[in-house]
Image (cartoon, rainbow, N blue to C red; front, side):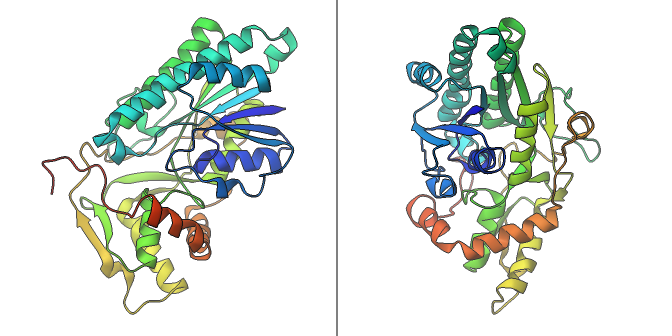
Length: 352
């Protein structure tokens, strides 16, 4: 099996590539533009192996995507390439529209043309996994969970662009018969995550004894899924998922943002004691525009139908993650000094 992974040098994509090569015994062609959040170091364990290839291309280049399919003849696609940071989408939405919508369209068209030319046996085996987010569903109240049939109500330019790409993917299944499977996941965390998201940013600031920004009052709730568990779930969809279906992948780990930050503080106080408790570094800052109150995934469909579930609790995964960042200072110091220094993103001109 040769799997074309888009965005394979990203946080989730690199975990998928590693598991496909090292655990599933698959060949992988990683198509990545290598933007600011990409990390080739996250692929060091498979770099140089005959079953892994990196192709530096942009999914927005239609001719390049056609060439990738023609040259590598994949038996499946896992589409992860996307602009993904909500804060960046608030002040720079054009890149999200271009990559997440136009890029997905280009990839779907390249896959459709390739699929139409396959012999019948290979057509039956071909799968296209479109990886999305729970943010397309909008904001929940204090009760309930997102199910696969929850109506879409995206709030940010990022989630709106992902909602559009979900609709495109399913339309290519219904109109053209391309064997699409759509997954919507909860917030991911774990090693190799670029330090602009809540957990790595908090860990690194806490290590360096810098202020720990918390939006609003910290009551916003997210469901958390370890990236390695997510990667295993996507591979399970590739093998056993049904074309035309949507599957929610969640960690069953509902936590408020403030709870996550305080857990990180307490872990670092134990693992790397400082002169004062790190909770004293917490600083409440103006909330994100359009900040959704609560996301929680109901993953019972994939549990029931495919037998997948996360292998880690949030507490187990968070300890692993904090320990990894403590042991991997060379990796994140480069990102902090050369790409992103941790300053606030997504601020509108009227905010202070």
